[in-house]
Image (tube, rainbow, N blue to C red; front, side, top):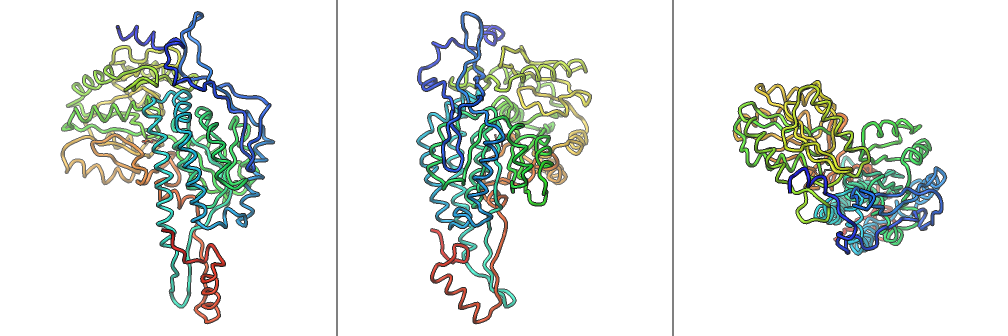
Length: 541
Ligand code: G3H
């Protein structure tokens, strides 16, 4: 079948979708979690449509896969009361509980979460259009993240379980929680990136209000009961709704201590400003990026094309770590463009449940039109679409568009496209990609492709001061999750590796006493009789 015809007939009829994919769909969420109670919701709801459209007798129709509550400010503020009540200014059961007991709750949750894997994975796939294979990976990676977080906390706790004696002062130094955390993840990793802040926040003794992303909310339905069962009341509250309706009053209350948001700098700035006491607010933020690849004249082109395809187009380019602009040396631009566009045309596209599918429909309404605008703008300034049918749209599906030659006048040169549009430029002077990186509003990562250690070393030293990870002959990526993940400028605030996240959601605090007999006796008695969870030498195995 011709490529164009294939794109135009990408969507299936309902009857041709495998039965097990649609089992239990639609899956409306009609409850939310506040103060340990699953409360029913009879108010307005948001209908959720999959990016997968269906062929019907009256044309293509988006498939309805469920709905979720559109809570109001009233419920949002109740969730805040519940979280603040459970924290109780640091006097609640959860913030004063021993680390070992908090770990048990998280383990109990993980166990029940795994039982929901099939439903969560299918909802994730159907709501955001992520391939089944990648949706399974996202789930498994999240479970591993929970296990790794527990292991990292045990390590941290073991180190803190001893006393330090310095200059006649006995001290025990630990990390303590910060308070109430507002936790919001992005649509592209609605489970993994939300949990990357949720789990460290909880395990460190904070209480949490979690708002699922606009796309990627339904998968929280099957997790509500495990959430309720695993944690004491008020420790974790889950609210659904329009962010702009329910979040500003939470921030304006002044009772949020940590804003954990993976989203945009615009939203972060807006929310941060709502807080009346900025010094009581810590922000842990993952925001935009425009990661560049620099392809040097001696790059191994097979490897480079392979990595750039993964970097630019995994999950349709909807990753904050995606490669979003490619600078290719003029000596290799011709073969690179040829091989890259051939590789794009070999990518399997289709429905997210199909085996080995790579390019799938996009979940955000209006996204194909936005991408088409970027492409049109680039064309007006002299770029061409160099791959066959690049930029062809069929409803929510956008076939990847490879643009060359891109120049600074074009929007796609600076805007984060977050989708399957690949801008390419050629350069002779290495200062061009370096200047681009320096001038960029973002500073997350970049990739260098080449073979000469001397040239690569000369680039590494200045570029590590512009971004927070330089990848050599490898696409940009977050993982492994034990590596620090952060960014400069408008890309991030705070660092989120497994171990760093525990620090981001806590503060160092200590108990200290001059080495007097009286103090020795007091401390020894507290420890021997296990009177305190903080002042303790218990060693978690
Ligand atoms: O969207 C941003 C994610 O953190 C990227 O993670 O590099 O593992 O896809 P990833």
